[in-house]
Amino acid sequence: MGCPHAPYEKIKAQFAHIGQLITPFPILHKDSLAQLEKIVEKDPSLFRRQYTVMQVEIKTLLEQYRKNKTALLYGDMTHTGYPITELLQAVAYVIANHDELSGKRPKKYIEIIQRHLHDNVNLAVEIRKPDLLTPLMVVGNGRGALIGAHNPQVYQRLVTRAPENEYKLFVRQITEDDLHYVR
Image (cartoon, rainbow, N blue to C red; front, side, top):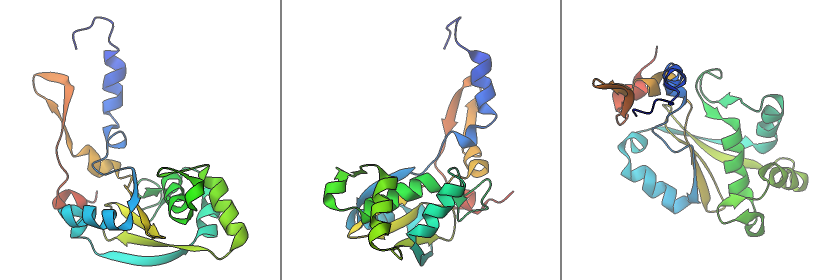
């Protein structure tokens, strides 16, 4: 960097929780179900997973969101899991009518969910939960979404500092061994 005004100490402070700042997987990727299945087939860390297929009532997800907007689901619930906000954005994408989308972006995702629940209080969505914390899939209406997990202890292991420059970081690809890492 070499800049005399660079906030070096603030940068170093961020390195203490670098696993919360990076992710080797998409945070939220929305597409057609066919395209998502191609992505899973091409990525060995996704393709090797065993997925549990669940029908989850959307009202339950919305209730969890109202209780805790930063909740992590399907992990240890405090440090690892899938962020409820991304999960609900994916749900809105797969249940939305075409006119409720702006491209692949739901227009006001909570309102979309509420409208559809008003029409069908028992509305459910298919969730494909992997056996390890790789992206979870939400599918419906020929659409789907991949949601990356929050897993900071594992992600921190992917980062090393350059020996010649403590402010330069290298991030390696995640491996199967990393996915099995439990502290």
